[in-house]
Length: 257
Image (cartoon, rainbow, N blue to C red):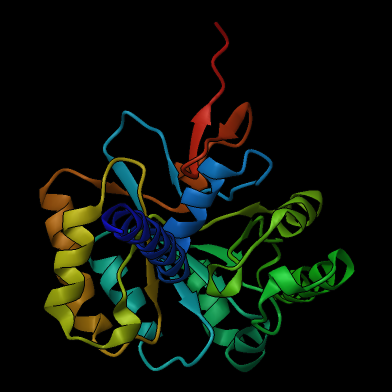
């Protein structure tokens, strides 16, 4: 009887561990995707960060739901001589074409963030192409330059998405440091979260319409620059050829030896 009780406890313990792991995958978001990449050798990962010996990183802004802070963001970036990357949704481009032009003219990267902000892992390759091409053409019409960086909405992707994006001239970009600015917890939690978690080659996620962005952005930049980081556009951080993305989402140069 005692042995049966022990075995029952062991089985229950194993079930609890499995359940906890499953819940972790649901809530870890992109880090969870990277972990899945370790377990699934056939899974293709986007670029979360870059393997570099240089003390440089990138900050990025997703733009979909508003514009009230964008001009202030651009002014702050100018003040600190920082160039960033803005990922724009098609309907945002339609609504704020003058801002698209300002972002480009002030020297920042403009990336594609889809046309309608869908969960793109649920789309066919043809639907993905439509999402990419519609927004890419709108951006090119305003700036004269087709974007070549793409960030999927919600960080949601699969192999079909990454392959289709690549076939259409896009590198798929994620992030390894999420500011969680959308939670609107105030400016200091964002400053602490970002500055404590960045490393060489990091890509940081912000949102252009986050409530406290005009407060936390200067503080983040000042602290990173004080620590010796150079903040560059993603196009200057990533490798353009002869690379692979490892099981953690880190982009690395191919070893020629």
